[in-house]
Image 1 (cartoon, one colour):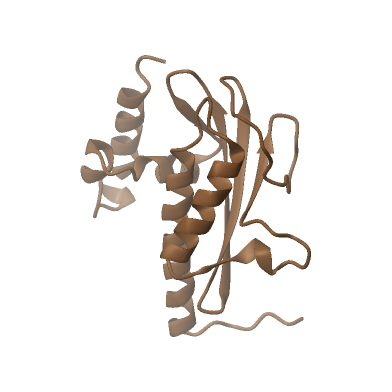
Image 2: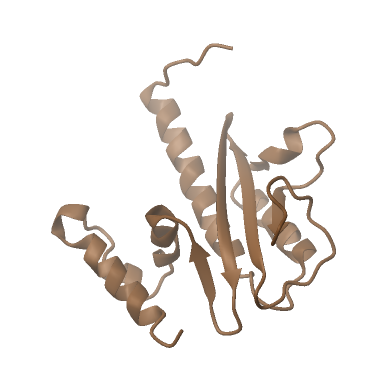
Length: 165
């Protein structure tokens, strides 16, 4: 299958789909805490995807009936959502796909669950996703670019957020 060069309209649709999925993933991350059942995260994922006027991309795979892949601890990838309550100390991975206006987007994030906080594991783009929470942290950097200190503002916000860890 050849990869086609996308035109501006297609790129804009893909960008919008990515924005929608980023928002959905962020909302799901907020559910990752002790006593949350993985099936509740799956249910919320379907609800948020439908609200975003998309379709669960993973459900387009024959035989796969879930919007997410949810992996806990030693599970590697493509874990099927199951009846499991998250515990402090678990490492949870959410993988989710959105089919929007003919294009797929797919995102994943790994979270270490602690009693007081949820700690994102991984690289700066995942930390940036976390910083998009509508609090002081994102408000102070929204609209800026990297050349004028955004990275330092994100680090400052994260340090304040985790100072009691």
